[in-house]
Length: 203
Image (cartoon, rainbow, N blue to C red; front, side, top):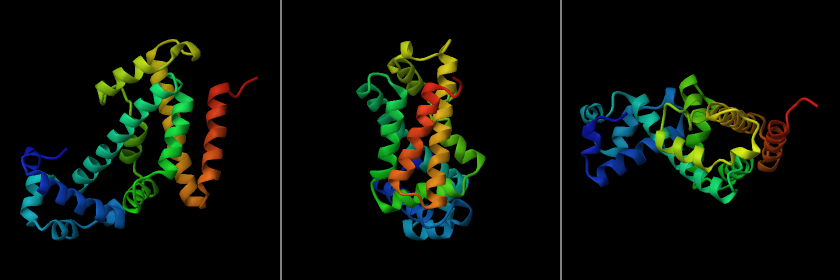
């Protein structure tokens, strides 16, 4: 997490630093990213950077978590639209993720995050609704899900189901990039996986 000094900056300075970081992390993956490039684009001294963040990883995961917060909010709105159906909701969210990412820079940022993934990166994606993170979203999520149509015993099982769905989406997007699948091919593969989860693999 950023230090308090970062949040004390003016809106303009925060935006300038964030935009510089986004450009660098879209250009190369985290392990190749350069603090020197970020501070040069942002127009700040190196010493100031360390007043705001511990290191480049601290800044990177702040950016990633902020982007995933937007996905959480979108997921909740889609869950309302689909009357609490988690499978239909995830299919539309995944379609949106594939086709309607705002710009090339954001697409490259996420592409680098997924292609050069670490356990911490994967956890950021798959734990979007982990009970130990973002309790506000967890509460809304549990209230919106139509539990009557699901074969679950309790809310803990529901959260595990969702983590499985997120892991499948995570893997599917990596496969799309590595194998060069089209959006339609990736979406079809994702739907096959969702149907298997929905109907089970045993007769």
